[in-house]
Length: 210
Length: 232
Image 1 (cartoon, each protein chain N blue to C red):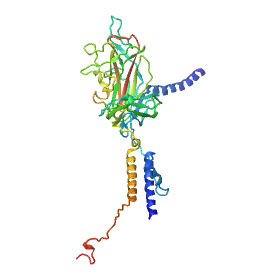
Image 2: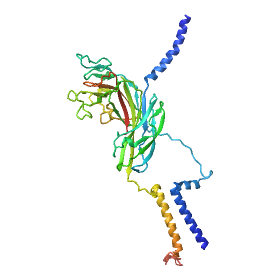
Image 3: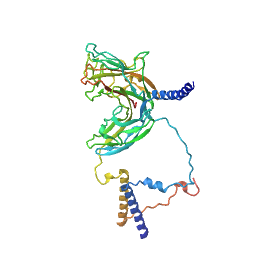
Image 4: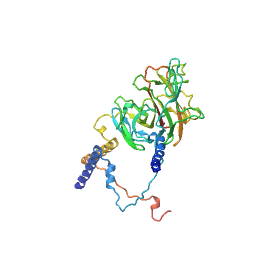
C-alpha cells in the first residue's frame, strides 16, 4: 500500500515534466531574419578599391541554435547589374546564434580593377543552418534584403586624390585667395571702397513732400 | 599701420594653414566648431523620451525542423524495385511528407515572422549518403526551368527528381515543381503572387517523385527545402 503511494507520488513530477516537455518539443522551429533596410554603399565605388559596407543585422527567430551565413544572390526585383558573389566579403563566414539571439555582421565590398561602371543590384541572403541527417528531408530557412551600390569612374591618382574632395577644394581656394591678397598688397595695388553720403531722394528734403 | 598690415597677413596665413591641416589630416571643421560651441549646463534643458517602432526585420520560421518522407508508392514490382512505405521505388516512385486533399495532413508550418514579404521556396540537388552522383531537380509544364526527361517531360528521367510543396485544397500539386532558385510559394498565393502579411502562417506538405533510374546505388539521400522571405 505504501509502495503504491510512493509510486504515485514519484509519477506526478514525471507526468508534469512530460506535459511541459512534449509541447516544447512539438513547437521546435527554425527561423532566420535579416534587416529590412537595404545594404547601401554611401557614395560611389571605384574599381580596384575595397569598401566597408554597413554591418548587416541578422537574428535567429527559431527555437533552435543555428549558424547563420551571409551570401549574395539576385532574388528581388530591381534594376542594375548582378553583384558577383566574390565582391561580397563578410567579416565572419559563420555566425553562431542561440534561439532569439541576434548579431551584426561586418561586410566588405571588394570591387575588382576590371569592374564595369554602373549600378549594381542584388540581395544579401542570410542562410540559417539546420542539423543534417541522411535519409530525412531537411527544411531550411533564409532571409533576404537588398544590396545596392554604383561603380563610377576612378579619380586619377595624385596628391589631391587622397583628400576629401570638397574640403580640399575649399582649402585650396582659401589658400590661393590669401596668397593673392598678400601679393596684391606687396605690389602696392590698393582698392579703396568708399560710401558716399547720400539722401533718400526728393522726399528727404526739409519740409517733407511738396 | 605697417604693424596692422603684418598682423592681417599673419591671420590670413594662419587661416590658410589651418584649412590645409584640416583637409590633410582628416580633421573636420565641423568637429572643431562643435567642440568650441558647446552649450553650458545652464543654457538648455532636455526632455528624455522613448519611442517604439514596428519591427524592421524580414524573417521566416518553419516548424517542424525536420520531416520524414513516407506513404511511398510506385515502382516496378517485377524488378523488385517497387516502393515500400518509407523507401522510394524505381522507376518514378512517389513519396510524401503529409498528404493532400480536404482531409489531408500538412505537417510543415511556414510563418512570416517579419514584415510583409514574398515567401519564396526552393529545393536543391538530392545528395546521396555516399557522396556520389546527385539527383537534379526537374520541372514539368510549358516553360520548365530544367525539363524532366521521361514520359514526354511529365516524369523525372535518369538522375532527376521532382519536388513539389502543396498547401490547403491541393494547392500546388499541379505546379511545375521546385527549382534551385527561390520561387513563389504556391501555398501563400500563386506562382506569381506570394505576398504574406506579418504573422501569416501556412501549413504545407511535400511531394517527391523519384528518377526513372539512378546512377548512384545509395539507399539514403539528403533532401533540402528552403523558405526565404524576399523584398517585394
